[in-house]
Amino acid sequence: MSGGVLPSLAALNAQLRGWLIMILATSLCTPEAGAATPAEVTTANQDSVVFIESTAPGPDGNPVTETGTGFIVSRRGYVLTANHLLSANQSAKLVGHIKSRFAQAIPVQRLTIPGCCDLALLSLPSGLGPFKPVTLGNPDSLKVGDPVITLGFALDTDLSATAGILGAQGGNTDGLWRITNPVTWGDSGSPVFDSKGRVVGLVKGGVAGAAGVNFIIPLNFACGLLLAANVPCLPPTGGQQGVAPIALSDGRLVMPWPLSEITSAELRLRNIDDYADVYVNGTHVINQAVYGQILQFSQFTSLLKVGENEIRVVIKNGQYGGCGAALDVHVNGEAIQGLQRAWTVPIENAFIGGLCVDDSILFMIE
Image (cartoon, rainbow, N blue to C red; front, side):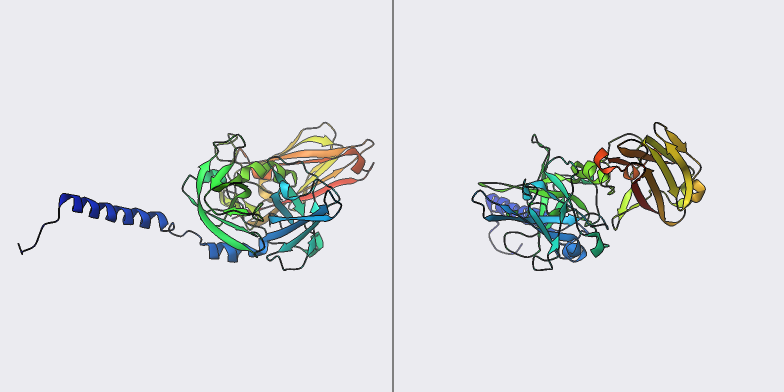
């Protein structure tokens, strides 16, 4: 052995601790293989994020403007955001700017669909569409420590992304999740993306005086609101037994089976008020279903095709007020929650003998 002094045990321990710290830091900071970067998420979704301004008279009568973020969830132009951004004053002026706060101002309409958990759905003018929706994911696929990215309009800045991790799931009375991403004024309503660039929630906000304590609303809290507006939404993992998962691609539903593996397909129409017709890819499969009936049509497997498919529901009012129906779709014996729909038109909006609903449900089959 060459000359020299052997390091002491304490020195070796210190050196080992240094190596361990470097290894742990490297492993924690190394992004997941194939994970989307903030730059990639921004590029892929910037045309789907909306800067929102809500202006209403303040206590002194002068206009007060609240700003925040929302994101497009439908090609028809529905925008999901945080309800606390919107003034309780129904006459408040709502304006949206897609992609940049300096983009063209677009009038936005507040939908009167009741939502929970500080959620609201807005509508962009349909004449400006079709719009580019984000890709919706399933928040129940996340675990604590997974990377997440937010995309929003913080303070007076333009669209920007932040990176962090999911810090906690639940653990509070509101069921909110915590993230480590920096969140500030203007970020409320921002979409929260997983490592594959799918939206799994939206920013609720932070806690005053508690830096780094920021909360998000998991996307499955919004499923009831989205489905009421006929926007597809994934059910939570481990939810209703027998409900098959369904993927989302470019805002459209994709069946979990290719056409060659679909052996049965069935429609179930219920809560009919007053008359309903159903078409599958243009073929009239339920004709003039009437009030009180529960109808099933189980022979439309042969009508399905590779590519885009359409289930069209037409509901008409009869002699009395009110109008609506509910539809379930079962494929290979499984109820497909992403294709469930329910329509209810209040009496004041249902014209006697008139058309109440003419809606299409689109989905893809590979």
